[in-house]
Length: 293
Picture (tube, one colour):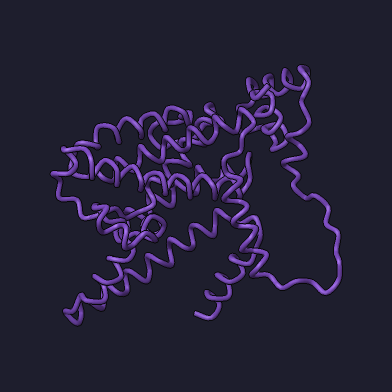
């Protein structure tokens, strides 16, 4: 147990580790909720379980939400079902790695947080103003699906021809995977899990807009990065000596160099010969930069 705790501490202290930190937070919350659930069943007393869920779940009614505004954040770090968290975190890991590869951990965190918050706000709005949803018996919203759909769609807009190799299907481009998932959520928005699918669509919209703005030169994730920097400064001890740091953001430096046409032609030839996965990180970054010109 001690080694597990030390490993968790190590991963949280590491910089540029947003993907793993978000996964770990979701896992820790799930484990705690699961243990509370087991003990509540063993002792036939669900008071503690109900209290915890009441403070994690995003409620359907505005009248309840205004007294628990923190649930707009807590709901998308919480899961109760093992298959729900397994699918969510696997999807987040696969698609999140693409965002990290091209845009870095900070933007991944921004997309995840914006996606979860907007998905929750859309859920609240529709379930309080649209008659079809008002009549449903939805208790509230729980799970990271909306935030993760933001990451999935952001990756699909960023590199639409990126290819996954899937069992039984073979190579499938990411843009088709995202389109299928969105279509399924549209259909599901009027079914039994309407709330969850509405959250999917809200997150998907955020992922699309985030990358579209970024390609036009506007990084809407800067406010979240600034908040993160603020908390890092107040939580980190100040050094006794003055230290000058160099800019280690290699990805930013690479992205500021515009590739020439010959380089792009060579990269495209390499894709034709060996596929997109044969490219180095620098070649992928040059190809993405060229797509913004």
